[in-house]
Image (cartoon, rainbow, N blue to C red; front, side):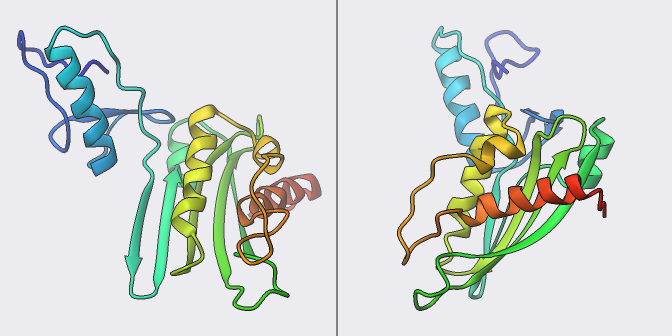
Length: 187
């Protein structure tokens, strides 16, 4: 976490090191955002500082033609492998109110722990313009803070009809996860 190597006065960061994942522990995670944060920690510590890399949740986004796919946290098989009791639910929610022109669907797979209701991960796919990349950041923030599905559902997020809904797509998916578990319907 201090980015120190086994050699005296040598620090390392980026794609050449294993990293701290906030849900999985130590893993290999070659991401630019992670590398930049590790580099800042390594540089500060090399100059005599005493800072720690807080860890990553593996947030990623990719644009493929006119689609944007993103993920953060764990998928169900990863969660199971790391000792969680995962349940994954799929939901589709519009990027903004349907009555306002141009509404587009966002497909969301959300994984939570059936034991404590904690959010474990999310994957989103939507057309360019659905703010899929920013919505995955909401999930990443919730993962970083260790929020439950219910807590994510109650977040106070922005709303105006041309840009969103009173219940954002992020929250619609968490509500679907909770309803699915309450109904006893498991994938």
